[in-house]
Image (cartoon, rainbow, N blue to C red; front, side, top):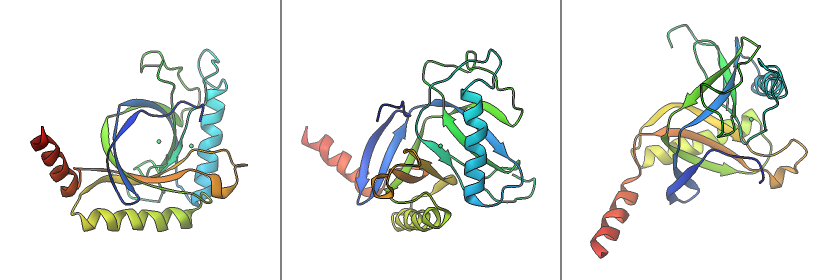
Length: 202
């Protein structure tokens, strides 16, 4: 894929689940208030962010497209609490990664008040990759599969489950790269044991 993507290192793979250490990166994030249908949230967030990268910013700069479009299932929640959508007090959000040449100081400022720029910190993520359509049903199904894998290893998840879309809508479903992912507190015990054995072999 020619589009720039967040940098990460695969630290361990357990069946279909990858444990990746992500480097920090910037995102443009569209806030969707009172989120409803999963697909509608993704479409509306994509439209706002696409307008941003095609000139709806101070300076009317054109910004290169990156991958993935990321989304975490939005839901209506009380005020007690990034093609990525995340539940928040404001609603849901969809994010595009900004090209790595930008910083918080140099990123074009959005003219849409529902779009913001923020830094995503480096973090350890558990990721499950799958093909097929980017639907709420698939998101929920794969999310449950990933949660069960984490529970089996007594790994604590941190934050909301996210989904990520890497391909254009015209890509045949069987060729698409989709992912569900969530930040976690540590690697599985098997990975730690493997690392100890490798150190002992030196």
